[in-house]
Each structure stands twice: as structure tokens, then as C-alpha cells.
Length: 163
Image (cartoon, rainbow, N blue to C red):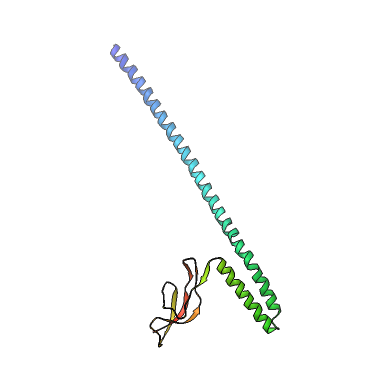
């Protein structure tokens, strides 16, 4: 009889141990789920915050360039007021052009050399080919200037090449 009672006690304590193990597992699952939800919310907030910071950065980084361009706008206004004075108008436009080139140079933007150069498909886009005494694929004419910023091509030059 003792054996049966001790077996029953062992079963009850075993069930209690199982129950406490089950409770511990459930508590751990609840705790991990809660932690995961907090991390997920934190990550969503982080993504939102970085997107906001990125858009603000773009706006303010462009503001420096815009500040440098405003004097050009002022000079265009002055030039357009002097259209009847042909020579002054041309000088004004040349001044604006020069200022614009200087702003681009300050930003490491440079014009791609074209006429008299050999066609480089990375820098030039051949729109036309013409019979010529020149060596084949030499650039004869530039239709639109190309520009680089550092080593990156912003826009290839559009050119006419020799055949």
C-alpha cells in the first residue's frame, strides 16, 4: 500500500513539476513575445525617424546650393531689365554663365571634353556619324555637353563622330 501511495505522491509531484515547467515555458513565451513586440515597435519608430531625418537632410543640403544660385537669379533679373542695351545684356549673360560655371566647379562638377577626342561610350553618346578625313570614331561636333561629378558621369555628352 505504501508503494501505491508513494507512486501517487510521485505522480502528483511529477504533475506539479510538469505544471511548473509548463508555466515556466508559458511565462518564457509570453516574455519573449513581449520583447519581440517591443523590438518590432522600436524598429518601426527607428525607420520612421531615419526617413524623416533623410528627407530633412535632403532639404537642408540643397539649401546651400540654392543660396549660391540666388545671386544668379538676381543677375538674370538685372540682365532682363537691360534687354534694350544689347552689349550690356550680352555682358550680363556672360557674367551669369561664368558664375554658374564657378558654382559647378565648387561642387566638383566638370564638363566632359569631347570635340577632337576619341569616342568613349562611357562618356559620350554618339547621335550621328559622318564621313570624314578624321580617324574613325573621332568626335567632330558636340550637340550637348556632358558632365561628371568626381568620377561619376552625371550626363554623357551627345556628339557626332567620324566614320
